[in-house]
Image 1 (tube, rainbow, N blue to C red):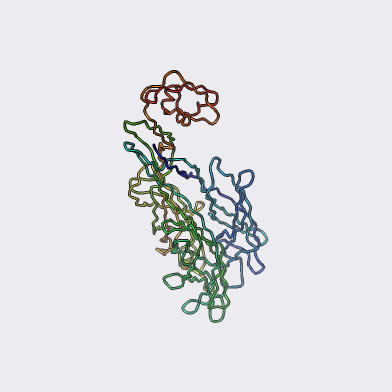
Image 2 (cartoon, one colour):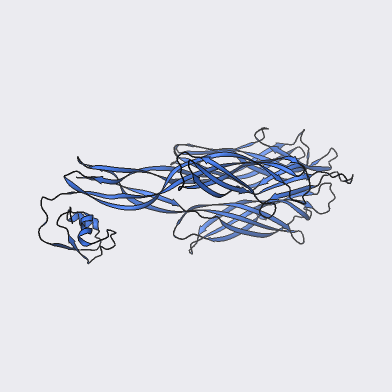
Length: 546
C-alpha cells in the first residue's frame, strides 16, 4: 500500500507592467504677501495622501492631494533679494481624482504611487499653472494553487523522486505614517535668517529589523534649508543654505514600529520611506522649526521551500499509477541589494549663466530602464532627472549697487539637457541568462560640487535591489496508487459508461488499472477532456498492456 501526504503549492507569477501615469493639472493662486513670478527656478510636489478602490467596472479609482513647493525669482521688489518661495499645502494643496484600467486576467497584489515629475508656469493675474505626473506601479501577478503529493509512505521496492521548489510568498504589507518635528539653530557661524525660501528633507540610512511579532524601521532625515540671510541692520543680504546631516550631527532620527504577529527574523523586508509633507518656520533670526510627515511601507516576504514528488517507481510486485500535471512555476533564485555611488560630470547647456556657488541639488526618484541577467550577475540601466540651483558668477562688468548675485537653475531632464543615465552590475553567483530579474532603485541622496564655471560633478547615491526568478516547467504528481499485477488477464470484455464527476483517475482506481492502460485501450490522449458523461470506455484486461 501507498500512503500519500497531500499539499497545496501556492505559486505566484509576477507580470511585467509599465507604470501607469496620471497627469494632474491645476491653477494655483499666489498669496497676498507673495510677489508676482518672474521666473520659475524649482518646483517640487509631494503626494500628501492617496487612496484607491476598485470599482464595479474593474478600474482602480484614485483620489488624493499634492503639496507643491515653488522657488522662483520675483518681479521688481523693494527688497535686495529677488528669490522667494511659496508652498501650497493643507487646504491649499491640489486635490485630484483619476481612474486607471487594470490589466485583465491577473491579480493586483498591490500598488504604489510616486510623483515622477512636477512643473509650474506663471499665469495671468497672480496665478500659476501646475502640471504633475504621478506614476502608479502595479504589482501584477497570476496566482495558482496546485494540488501536489509532498510525501509518500512506501513499501519495500517503491522509490520516489522529489523536487524542491522555492516560491516567494508575500506574508503581509505594513504601512504607517508619523509626524516629525525638530528645531535647528542658525547661530554663528551660520548667517542669520531674514526669510525662508524653501526646505528639502530626505530620509537616509533606512534599515529594518525583524524580530518575532515586531518590525522596526529606523533612519534619519537630512535637511537642507534655503533662505535669505540678513545683516546686523536686519536688511536682506543674499541667498544662503544651511544643511543638517549625519556628519555635522544635525540629522533627525526617526523610527516606525509595527506589531505584526506573523513577523519572523528569517523573512525579508522590502522597505520604503517617503516624505509626504514638509514645512519650516522661523520664530526668530537664529533658529527654525521643521515639521515633516513621513510614511513607511514594509513588505514582508518569505521564501517558501516545498518538496514535491515528481516520480515514483515500483519493484516487481506492482505497477505505479501516477496522476501528473504539468505546471509552469516561477521559482525564486535569489535576492540581493547593494548601495551604489555614482559620479557624473555635467556641463551647463548653452546660454546658461556661469556657475558661482551651488545652492541646492534636486533629483527625481531613480527609475530602472532595462535589466538583463548574465552569467553570475545582473545588469541594469537607469535614469533620473537632476536640477541644480546656483548663484551665478559675477561678470567683469557689474552694477556696484547690485550686491546680491543672480540666482539661476538648470535641469537635466527630457525637455532640456537630457536625463542622467547610468548602468551598473550586481554580482549574483548562480544566476544565468534566461532568468528574469526585477530591479528596484531607492534614492539615497545626492550632492554636487563645482568643477569650473560651466561644469559640475554630481554624486548620486542609490540602493539597488534585484530579485531573480526562473520559470520552470515541472510534471508534478497530484496523486499516486500502487496497482497490483494480476495473476492472469481479466476474462471477457468489460465496458464502463462514464458518469458525471468521473475522471480517468477515479475510473482507474475503481477497476484496479492505470490511466495509461485506459488511454491505450480507448485511444485517448490522456488530457481528460475526452472523458465525458455518457461515453463508453473499454476496461483493459490487464494494466500491463491495456
